[in-house]
Length: 272
Image: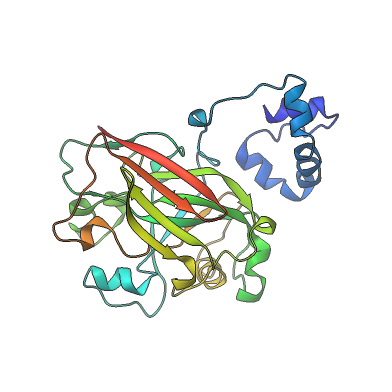
């Protein structure tokens, strides 16, 4: 669709037609994409093909890295009985956990404690290592919604979070990347999670203990950040694990994450 839209508008983006190739050439292709975006209504009226929203894939189906931050909201740390960390708590999710904004979340039969975590995802747009906080936003392309789905027993079994956070389908992302210039302040956004319409999390990114610039600098001090990499910035309080009794996600339930100015993702839990 993107290639067709560009062609109809008289532009050529060459072979940069998938998300990662676009991000890797962002400085080059951004003017073209912005020019085409101003003519979308005209192009649709002229017959440009459309697709229903529920067919959207993740904006970046296979990012190079998904870096996750734990306990970045003090009240979330406290609701689980954990200390508030002195520096960002970093773990990873396998990239095969990434799924689309409206795709199902599979719950394997042996998982009885499936949990939700609404998170703001930061999308890296420019490569860098040892990035300073002052220049961190120069490396941020934009943002999307994420759900850091967690199988809690598997997460806590060994002290290493990765397995319980990385089952297939445990990282819905989307619905699209909202570029940084479209968001006045990513650290002043309402963030929510609903399950079957019931609000479970309702907070603000202003309550993150470590802000976006700090996270980019901290992560890049150890690891080169590359276009398409994702940083999940942590979840606010209200997760199932922090409630008594815990309302674990069940097959048939719809789990939604919504972030002000970024959008909404909605994923049905299915028996895996």
